Image 1: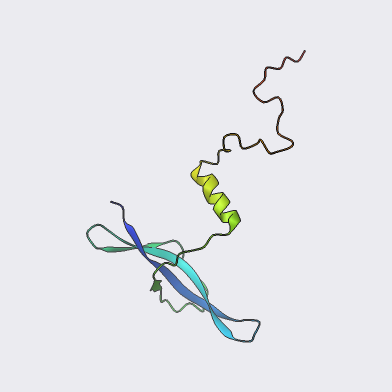
Image 2 (image 1 turned 135 degrees about the vertical axis):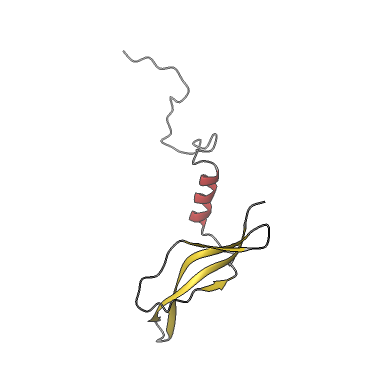
Length: 107
């Protein structure tokens, strides 16, 4: 059994003001925490903030289920399919090669 994702590691890297004038914190996901089969926790860092506003603290949050946009869903499906075109997928494409699968002799 592989390690299980249990937390996102997030650092506060600054502040900004939104359109309504409210001060908000700017966050950066810096890694993930995984739980091993034996119950141990491991932190995999993907980035470290280098901005002067970073306090050195990293917070852990339970990962949120992310909704994907239609374009992201289409990309995920293509990636899962090895970026191969679906079988018969060009039937509705008006400029598809009409000579596909036919022998053609050019002299």
